[in-house]
Image 1 (cartoon, rainbow, N blue to C red):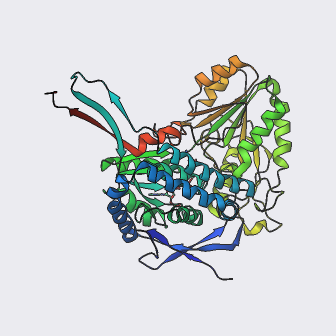
Image 2 (cartoon, protein in one colour):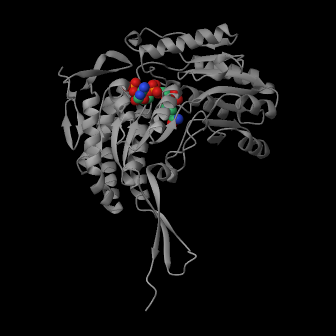
Amino acid sequence: MSVTTYQNYIGGEWVAAKSGETFESRSPADADVLLGRFAASGAADVDAAVTAASEARASWRRTSAIARANILHKAAEILASRVNDVGRELTIEEGKTLKEGIGETGRAVQILRYYAGEAQQPDGEHYPSANPNTLLYTVREPVGVVGVITPWNFPIAIPAWKIAPALAFGNTVVFKPATYTPLLAVRFVEALAEAGLPPGVVNLVTGSAGGVGDPLIDDDRVTAISFTGSEPVGRSVAKRVSARGGKVQLELGGKNPAIVFADADLDHAVNHLVSGAMWSSGQKCTATSRALLDASIADEVTRRLTERIGGLATGDPLADSTQVGPVISDEAVNRILGDIESAESEGARLLAGGSKLEGDGRERGNFVAPTLFGEMNPESRFGQEEVFGPVLGITTVKDMDEALEIANSVRFGLSASIFTSDLGKAMHFINGIDAGIVHVNAETPGAEPQVPFGGYKSSSSYSREQGKSARDFYTQIKTVYVDLPSPA
Ligand code: NAP
């Protein structure tokens, strides 16, 4: 079968890496499935992309917001017309189930539409002046060339929620997607290119962290970097970008708690604990990784979770019956198995899963059995660190104070849930939890694009993505004093 070689998109042209080298993208569910070859780019390709973005900057900035919005609308329609095909490719390339793959692609469409609307919202404010003859106002202008660096776990939604607002507010973009998911990046950029985005406004450069990420981060012409990924990489990116005076935004990891009280609807809570922890193989920054169970219902909920998690259908993500697909890579399997081993050695009690899965073709992919631990010590490494896989740990708590103390004891603060029918308890939790996103009676993942998204503490950089907050990162404020001539 012939294999397509995909290229970078620079200055409005699809071009090979200057070195001519390529890398492969293979399915995490089956290493025999090759999705394509992609440009293995380096510093020279990044330089060309940044040059193209810099050259396009002035005219894109002058393009009316209405014209920019029209292009985003058109890109949304193009992607919407392909949602099933692209969603299927997402499932093959990233490994989440087909329902999730199509759902995520639909989310990217929704984000494009949302920012087409946002582009047309007011972009400044008018103020009274001490001088009656002064017209005093602010206007938000683009920051310039934005570098967008994204992870593989939401290979089209995250690029969409960074690139759509960047473009809507008049910036040009150089996009470095994760090495594991270049095809979805190509699909997103194809929709923008076909929608009529002028050359140089969006540039895609595929390749490794060192080959593409490093030169992009260090290029002075790149005014701002929006990064989503792991905490150590994010911190080092921020240091480097800040050191050269650039603007930087980080969205990083989580160790998200869900607290269940005795007055909750337990069937509902268990459903949400399972989906929150296990869908997308637990590879969501907002995945539920800690279940904090009120002592009076802990045994019952643990029993139900053990049964449900132990029975999840794990396998080919394209199959209708599959609930949990593979994890992204062989290295991820080994890392997660290492975390499982270390959780056991720290005293957590293995209740379900805990091993690599093989058989039924799964030996060709990267499958970890959905895993449940009881007796997770909140102070242990397992209780503190992100696993980023299908692993949930249970800790029993005696009351709200203890639940909040444990929930807040980690350095992350992305998302948190409480399950209760007591409004007072819910409000106490909402007010006391250190998290950027709080759900009452729903799983910790789940975010709508019209509201701010981001975490407290080490989960973020005190900035927010999505919703109206995106305007803060992708624009800068100009304050204008117009002293009008006195009337004659
Ligand atoms: P990662 O290893 O940090 O990679 C993220 C992106 O950064 C990739 O494009 C990667 O390129 C690039 N990169 C890595 N090292 C770099 C360097 N030294 N310089 C420049 N770029 C570099 O993270 P990941 O494994 O893809 O993603 C998983 C992590 O992302 C988890 O911690 C998860 O919680 C977090 N996440 C957070 C959010 C959020 O919104 N808070 C959302 C999703 C995921 P390569 O692919 O080429 O290595």
